[in-house]
Image 1: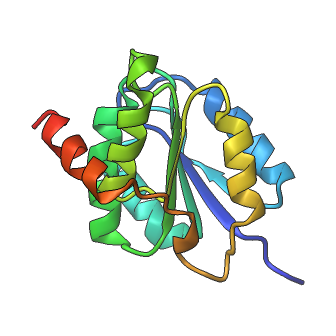
Image 2: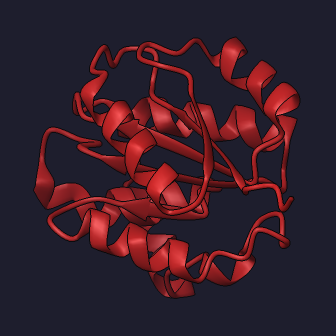
Length: 161
């Protein structure tokens, strides 16, 4: 029997919302993934342990409390140090200002996320990403949408330190 691709769902430590994680768990199961949901307020150490024990092809970080951008940057640093090849996406309400979505998206991609799904088309964009997701390729590099080099310089100068 063919094993389903594995997906690990988590959120940032400050996010106590569970409904988004349950929705994603059900939706990803319908898309053909074996899903492990780490629940709300996930400690980073628990996430890193799950990377080893569950060995997912995809990690999904979802946050709806408006703090996902800052805490998501820390999470991806830890994930990349621990497992540089796993595909990792983030989405939801990552800031308190939707006007920042473009900068937030590009910054999180530069930080190491494979995909960032925010705004009105987040789920449709995520569905498109999954249609082309190749679980045999550990990181699915083809999906990384880096901005143009001149924009990267401007972006890096504008980011809070």
